[in-house]
Amino acid sequence: MKTLFVIRNQNDHYLGKQHDWVDGHHRPALFRTEHRDVAINELFETNIRDFDLRGEIVPVEVDKHGYPAVEVLNPISTEAEIPGDQPVLESATEDTVEASLNESNSDQQRPSGT
Image 1: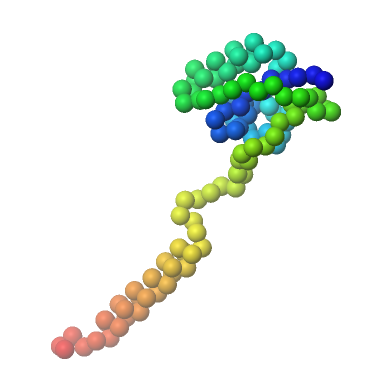
Image 2 (image 1 turned 180 degrees about the vertical axis):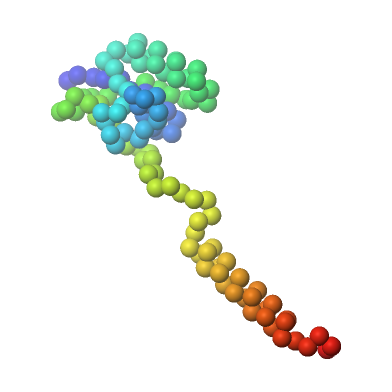
């Protein structure tokens, strides 16, 4: 069976054709080559742009469509995550605001001479 070479980083993501890191769900978007020396050159050039890269060249089998048969080891989340956007915190904030409004209203209702 035919073997292709792909590049995987320390986060278990694969190098894409557009020089971005993808998780492997969309196999046609993966960088792949039949020649190990081409993969070595690509890894070297990618490492020049990203000093923190710890990449490896991985030989993989070809699936029935001619794409590399890679495993998705670390899926990339497609949902935009907003830090601190948690329902528990939001309801707690609403309760805190309501409590402070109640306190300020009760302070305004007290007579000033007492």
